[in-house]
Every structure is written in structure tokens, then in C-alpha cells.
Amino acid sequence: MSSRDQFTSKIGFILAAAGSAIGLGAIWKFPYMAGTNGGSVFIILFVLCTILIGLPILIAEFMIGRRGQKDPITSFKEQAPNKPWFMIGWIGLVACGLILSFYSVVGGWILSYILRAVSFSLTGQGVNFSTLFTDIISNPWEVLIAQAAFMLLTLFIVQAGIKNGIETASKWMMPILFLFFILLFIRSITLDGAMEGVKFMFVPDWSYLSGDTLMLALGQAFFSLSIGVAAMITYASYLSKKEKIVTSAVNVASMNIAISLLAGLVIFPAVFALGFSPTEGPGLVFIMIPAVFEQLPFGGFLLLVFFILLLFATVTSAIALLEVVVSIGIREKTAQRKKASWLLASIIFIVGIPSALSFGILSDITIFERSIFDFVDYVTSAILMPIGAFLTSIFAGYYYSKKISREEMQASPIVYNCWLFIVRYVAPLSIAAIFINKVFFS
Ligand code: PFF
Image 1 (cartoon, rainbow, N blue to C red):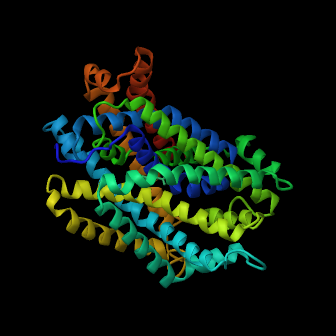
Image 2 (cartoon, rainbow, N blue to C red):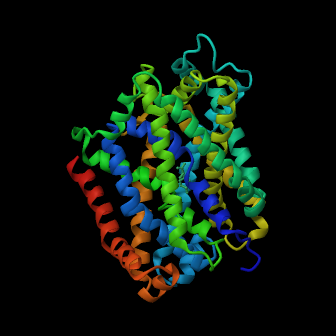
Image 3 (cartoon, helix red, strand yellow):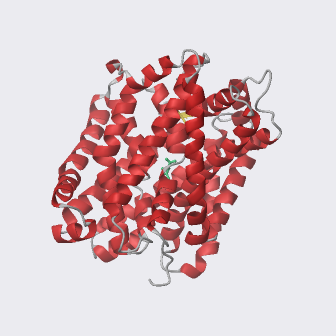
């Protein structure tokens, strides 16, 4: 155990955990999900689900991971011998592998954009951003090569190990990304007609309130906090006993909400001001971001820098996904880390091929009325993640004695009792209710 790396500082851990959480979920998925699900209502539900259900489960995952100091399966086996709780680890393995299979497709799109941004062919006269996006994602060779390149990048970083790779880079890339978003926000909000976008985000149209929207908002909260799939358990297993997990979790959740809202505040004012549609789907950010940069001086150059930062945010999340799969895959056999990483990354790449092609040559294939890409996304964020999160909250709430959880949490009695009430009742009951409502009533 002592040979396992640990994070050298608290800020290193928070940034790495935040780096794993903040990625395409906040920047790419959140705006398009909000755009296709009625804006404000989805956003309100997402924020509520993040604070009331996601955050307490994040605390639970940090607790379980740090207490175990091992990969999730071994950790559950040691903490609950002869009980089936380790299944949470297996759910995590499958879910993280599936998420990475389509995450790497989007990572590939970013690489494609970077390649074009280098030659400044994304900005300037006459570029139709919607057509450009469609051309890129429907070109089978381009998407596959880009997806493979993205997987390789992730693989190399995971092999470099925890400290050298993730921690150093997170420290300065994430704050710069944040500053970029502020700059974009200022440009977007000062466009003529921008207020319509702000209204779209904050003035609720309750006709969008439905079981489906609730389920999608819950899935979005889980997806963007990386919970329910043992990822945060894996990260916290590298965390030293000295750290306060509540503060870390609150930081991660609030940064995540802030970036999601900021991404929305960049995208939606521009959508309305520049005459686009919020229901554009997965292309929304890829179409709108270049459109906003076009309104800025040195737009072509700044766009290139932006996509490099976005690539970074995406890679830090992809690393977490691969890290979970690899750490569960190898468990104690650390000597086989390299071989296992290559093997698992190759499998994930192959599983991702149909998703990559589902915007082009496989676009006619649908599963339960969804494209292949959408279906894999839906199965993971709306089904597997909530199941994993449900089980995690039951484990922390009931299996752990109060003595253990109180000792791990190191929080004031009020904070501790609120947390316990949520993981025992609020979180599991709401997840179950949202599921039952979706399956039987909508
Ligand atoms: N939270 C990441 C994002 O929002 O982009 C996605 C993710 C990463 C989900 C790691 C799950 C995970 F284990």
C-alpha cells in the first residue's frame, strides 16, 4: 500500500478531482442538454440534483475511497468481506469503459477542430459553422483517426502515473480555462439580443417539467460530478488521511456548477443574438464557440488556444475514466499496468467505433429511438450512474456504522447529520422515484 502514489497537496487533489469532474460534461453536454430540454427548467433541476443528491454521494465516494486506499473492488471486498458490495466496482468498470468509448469520439472532434484552428480555417469570411461540424463528424476516416489519436494521448498520460501527469498540469490549465470562459462570457453577453439567452437560462417554462427532464437532469448531475461509477472512489484512494473530504467535495461540486453555468452563459446569449437554435444537439458548443470567437479581435488565435484548453479539460476526465478501468483491471498486479492499459484502451476504442460512425455512415441505425452514440450515453448517465450512485449511498448510509462515517467525515454534527439523512433517505428515495416514474409513467 505504501508504494501507491499519493497526491502531494490538497489543492493537487482538489484540482485533479475537479479536473476529472469538469470536462465535456459541463462544457459540451450541459449546454446542449439544457438547450434541448427547455433551458431553465433543466438547469434548475440540474443544480438541485447536484447539491441535494450529487454532493452527498460525492462525499460518500471520497470516504469509501480514502478509507480503502485500494482500487474500488478490493476496497469494497476489504471493507465488506463476503458481501456483494464490490459489484459497485464492476458497474464502475463497465460504465467508465462505455463513457470513455463515446467521450473519446468527442475528444477526437476537438482534435479535428484544433487541426483546423492551427491553419486558421475555422474563422474568417464565409465559414458556415453548422456545415463544418456536420462535415467533420460524418467523415468516417477523420472521426476514427481522431478518436484513436485521442485515446493514445489519454493512454500515454495514464502510463505516466498519478503525480507527474495529472497533478502538475491541472494546477495551471484549469484556472486558465476559467479565465477564457469569463472573457467569452463578456463578449457573448454584450452582443445585441443576448438577453433572450439569459432569459432562456433563468426564466422557467414549466411546461418542460417532466419525468424525462428530471431523469436527464439527474443523469447530467451524476455525469458531470463523475459519481456512481467508482471514479471518485478511485481518486480518493490516493488521498491522504489528513485531508478534509467535505471541503474537497464542496469545492469540486461548486466549481462544476460554476463552469456549467458559465458555459451556458457563453453559449445561449450568443445562440439568440446570432440567430442559431438552442436545440442544435451535440454540435451546439462546436458551432457556437467559433461563432463567438469570430466576434473577438484575434479570434482565430484565441480559438486555437481555447480548443487546446478544452482538449486539456477533456483529457483530464478521460484519464480518470481510463484510470478507473485500469486500476480495477489490474488490481494489485501493478507490474502489468502497461500491458493492461494498452489492452483496455484498445477494447474501449473498438467499442467506441459504432458511436463514432453514428453521425455518418451508421446514422440510420437507432436503438430505442436513439442514435448509437446517444444510446450509449443514455445507458451510462441515465441508468448505470444512478444505479451505482444509489448503491453507493446505501453503502455509506447503512453499511458504515455511524462511528466510521463520522470519523471519516470530520465535520460538525449539523453537517454530518444532514449528510446522513440525505444518503440514507433523500438520495436513494429520489433516485428510485425518478426511475419508477420514468419506467412506469412516461
Ligand atoms: N465528469 C466528466 C465530465 O463531466 O466530462 C465525465 C466523467 C469523468 C464521468 C469520469 C465519469 C467519470 F468517471
